[in-house]
Length: 506
Image 1 (tube, rainbow, N blue to C red):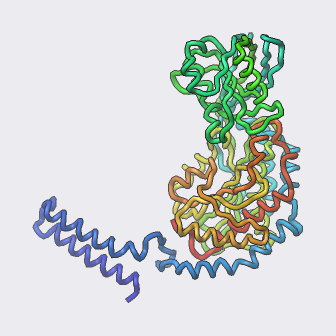
Image 2: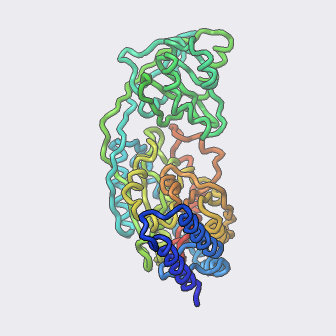
């Protein structure tokens, strides 16, 4: 008798026993003793089942997946395909293609803020480009996104000397009054210090000179700086840019007001100006700043997630998703954040198509909109498609630059991780084989929270926050050779997962 038949027979016997317990006395509710016996019977059932099948997923024909040794052999069989992808992307006729495509796009369109005409133009551009590339099911899925514009911005130190302060208003900031704000400055290095000095902050402009520890930890000053300053009666806040290095370059980003807390104007300033005012304040020097901001918030605009596919040959309803976001901030060119991630994701489909490959599952490209405002486009996509969540094999996002890659960050169970390690071993010819813990990506977190395996590109981030959300995010940051390597990694991983006989276990 096969394993499946044994389980079915055992289950049927158990159900009969439970049926007798429930209905032998026509009682509407079993006695406590009977309920305890029922629990015991179900416990026996699951103890019998789980040791042999824990972590496994049923395949389409009702058989259980092959043993891991068989999976390892299956992956090893992709050696030639992986080599062909690497050769085409890194050394062949597709060499530098993702970089060159991105350069034309970034130079032509420029920055792409949510709700802007530039983002509309970018989406139209990509829709036409993906169709011209011969990809399948190219279409747009509408999304309502925030529409904020910074308008005129100006800041000047008036005391102890005249000094022009470089600023970038933070997303969703309100404007100053038309005449601007002139106020004394209080400099703090943390929220704790602000709260200790709350009485001093009333009627002043709070300047945060928080040290950069990591983006994840330090970004809360950008997100919550205006709210915390408003709670103690400040009239505006200026936040030291969340950056690991600066050449007098402010870095923008989204910030969040809270209901019940006054909304005050807020902007980022350069590391240099924040540190200078901190030194002045430490010496007891009085600092007065004039601030004028013309920011406006408009009703939400219609935007689009941009989608293209290579339809699967055997299981077209099952999806391997590769992605990056098309929107950016309104400074620089959005080449690094996230032009690179979007274009290596497009390149993954192009390389598969150029090699004449068609995976068993559908390889789907999604270029998200509204990511910079908190993953607006991705959340709507999730809400529209989550009813088919069991068909999503893996979700992949590249949104931390396309510098020299070192491997893949992965979120999933231990068996799925072992499979990813075997796939990454095929990238040994370009020495990019590491598998790191915990994939990261605003746009794929919705899926990963529901148990779908996720992956993000891991690359050299040592300079990423030099340029992040600043005028420095231009094509000059990008390196064609590094983008070639990123595209090779992205394509090998996504294609093999899409072509394997079994979906990743979860």
